Length: 102
Image (cartoon, rainbow, N blue to C red; front, top):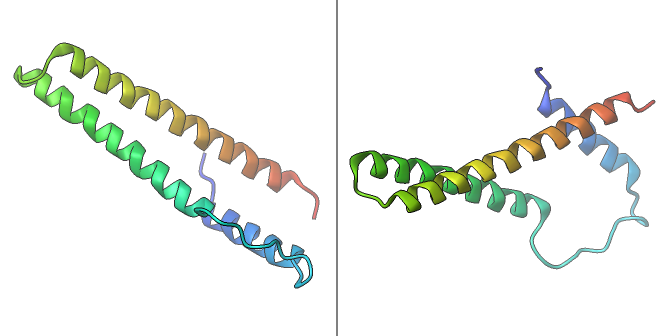
């Protein structure tokens, strides 16, 4: 299933700019933006996957304890499942937006 994410982003940006007027713009909030939070989460996910790969390689060479290898691989697996679940939710939301009448 190929979904044009760039088209979705453009549609969202267009809808966001149409929906906001000068009087209805939300007040700026403190803290990290959604993009920053997403970037951090993706970075941590990639780091977890690399750690699992690294520990697996060390385990094959006999340079790591089996418990450490299993722990790292389990963490990587849980991370991958979370990423897939988030992706599925984003796709479902995008499909729901496409079904909305214009």
